[in-house]
Image (cartoon, rainbow, N blue to C red; front, side, top):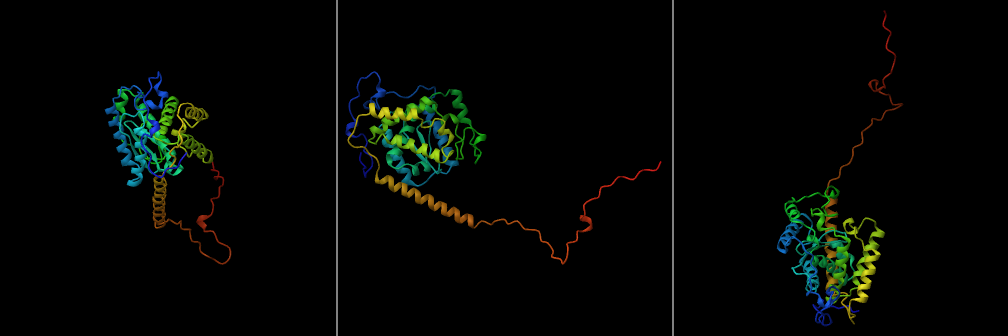
Length: 332
């Protein structure tokens, strides 16, 4: 393995060979880009893209999007390397949401969002690329719209934007820790779909030149985070957690399907600069928030004043407790 100081190279030389006429091209990494992996759907690609863009715009308006151009450009550059070495047939873009949770999500039409918590948690560029490769697998397979009907499309296209801070249980389509509404169908995938995104994502990671074992590194972080702080990983993500079966499946794929390489891309100097830049931005914002909180007026409860008197305190006549007695007998 090697740590490279420059950005990843698209299509490393040993990743480009003729696609074999094998009966199962899904197992042949040299057929990436020349095979059909997208699931059939009644929703056309243009309609799915329009729907995804609609919700992406809602997220931009209603959540805290990181506006730093250096970080956004870097994350998108990593994703473009993955996308160009994938089976995705549509452009893919990535937005960064300011949230401490380790999470990422994919909307229809190639719109991916990752949290700043994820960018801070990964140790190297290969681990970041692993998450993006998994999400790109969902894009390539069109999982978000695979089971949608035209009726669903009409319903999702007309759902009004909800802004429900800290009350996501009220509306099942809201992402944990964020303040925007997204249909649950876009966020929850079946067990088979998660395995398919894993299977393809590992291949895309390899073809882009990254160390495919980074997939296992990300899984390890999620497991450790959930063990040390139960509930810190969004339950939407943990519905299909990195189980032992998923980990074993990825290990077998790396061992049996991926051609071996002398060197892999593990990290870059750009990754470490971006991670340091993100830490500085978030620290400055925290300091500004703390300073603003200090300047806010605080309410102090006023204690009732009691008069000091010499001797025992005399209880006012009207403050004496009532005396209960029997009513007088009426004379007959």
